[in-house]
Length: 165
Image (tube, rainbow, N blue to C red; front, top):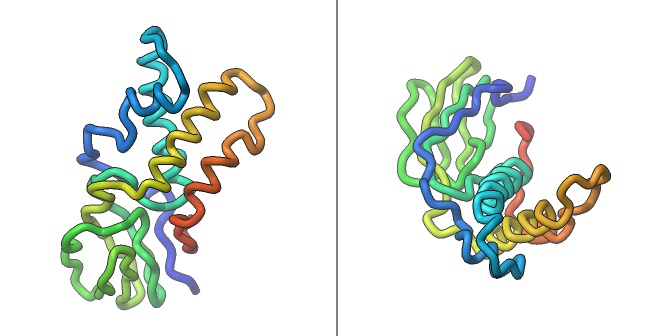
């Protein structure tokens, strides 16, 4: 058997209040000089960050991540980079580094840790901006295939490859 993150067990709490891209940065990227769509663009920034996180399995902002792991060997913790120490769990060992692996006896374990970048890499910020632009320019379009190709090109170097994605 393979180790897995239990579907639906990943939760996020204590998210940073500031997005990694500001409204003024997004408006400059979009070349928008008016204020009537500020609320919409702000919502797009959050949606774009969440989209990038779901496609890379990386926490762009700092927050607490909790998940349940079914161990049969080892598995990489989801949504790193891990910041600081991981809450101790009896019978479980963690490798060091920003994207640690979990090792332990077969069984279910609840794991909680701090994750995310204090200052996100520019490639992830550019992916968010490109996704904001794609969503802003393609509102209501029925065919949305490949409309965020530029965003994908920016986030691919950061994408984690793991069995829980």
